[in-house]
Structures are given as C-alpha cells and as structure tokens.
Amino acid sequence: MSAGDDCKQFVAVTITSNLNSFHTDRRFPGDVNIANLKGKLELLTGCMMSTMKLELRDNDDELIQYLSDDTLTLAQLGVQNGMKIHVIDTSNKEPEDEEAADVSYKLSTEEYEQREESMRKFMERNKLGRFDEEKAKRKEEEEENETKLSASIKVGDRCEVRIPGNPVRRGQVKFVGKVHFKEGAWVGIQYDEPMGKNDGAVGGKRYFECKQKYGSFIRPSNLTVGDFPELDDELDEI
Figure 1 (cartoon, one colour):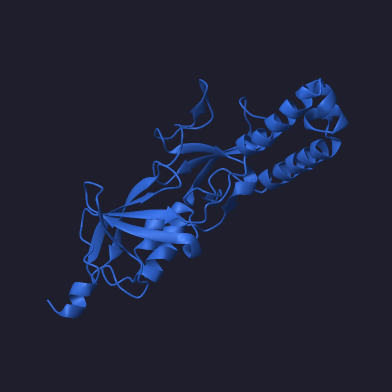
Figure 2 (cartoon, one colour; figure 1 turned 60 degrees about the vertical axis):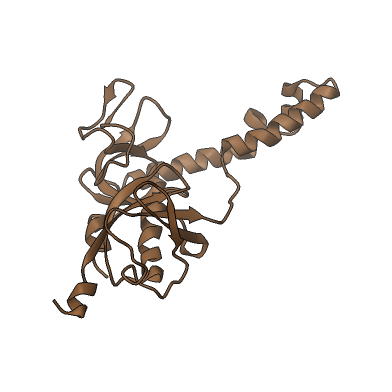
C-alpha cells in the first residue's frame, strides 16, 4: 500500500464536549487537519470554531495531548482508533436562561423586603413578571411567529435543529401542532441518532412513533427544513 493510500485511512474516535453530556462515535480521514476537523465538530457539538479547544484522550479518559496546531493532521498527531477527542468551549458564556434571570430577581426581592415592601407591589411598580405589558406583548408576538413558521413545516420533511449550546442535529419531522405539556406550536422530530429525549410520547400521550431517545419536541424557530442528509454522510466527505 502506498503512503498516499495510507493517509486516506479512517480513524474511529469518540467525540465528547464540556457543554453537555453529549458523546458520539465518528470516523474521520487520517489526513484531515485540525482546522477542518474543527469545522466538522462545530456541527456536532454546537461549539464555535473560534472558541474551540481540543484534547486528545485515551480510552480511560486520560489526557494525551492538546490538538492545538491547526495545520497538523490526525495521522501526524498519532490519533488512533478508540481514542477520544474532547471539545472544550472556552467562551465562558454566561447562561442566558431563566435561572440566570432568577438570580437578579431574588436579589431585588430581598432588597425590597428590607424596605417592608411586598413582592407583588414591587413587581407591579416596576412592571415585572405578569405586570410587564411589553414582555407579554413580545411573548404574544413570538407565539404568533412560531405558529406562522409551523404552517410551512410538514410531516415527512427533513430538517436540521440548531439550539445554542447544543450539537447540531438532523432528522425527520413526525408531528406538527399543539401538545398537552406546553403552550404554542411544536414540532416532533425523529433524530437520525439517539440524541433526543423520548420515543414520541410525553406524559403517557403519544404523538408519533420512534425508538427511545430518538424523539424530541422543538419550537419551529429552532429548526430549518430542507435537503439535509444524515451528518455521517457529510462528515465522511472532505
């Protein structure tokens, strides 16, 4: 076998991330360099290339080396079958979620309790929570937008799901409509891989059929329908 043929061989590794408990087994060509690999891993993990740091680990999860030179290939770095590539997001982003907002809310409540004001009066005076008319209006507009988006999504469509901090996932639309466990429009997805949360049923009510961990319900704004082949097909091509 020639040296050229040898560098075209694939190496099987496990991909993990510090963003979540996500892990998956993937095969990459031995001659793919770290810069191109990061582009593939951005799709898989949701971590941006610009803030991505890679660790090469053995099958006991022990650090072997950092994959920091973007010009070197997996073969040149000695990456072998069974090793792990751990993706670290170095952006140190603050969580933009309800929990983060709740921290500032509790601090404000404590401050006003010291002044012997009730939470309700404080919220009403500052137009917070249910007293925030602008927020309620924005939420209503968002729901209207989700409903409009759902009208263009059909059962059987191929789709790609992108949610900040999560790996890019692809699959097929299995359900579009309202559900009993949340308000608004939702889309039931059967993922190509076991990266979901259910089997198409939630709380004893079934919306569609699929294998366990392949199903999930997504807001219409978090997915795009189109000609999206399975990620394996793209990742195996350089």
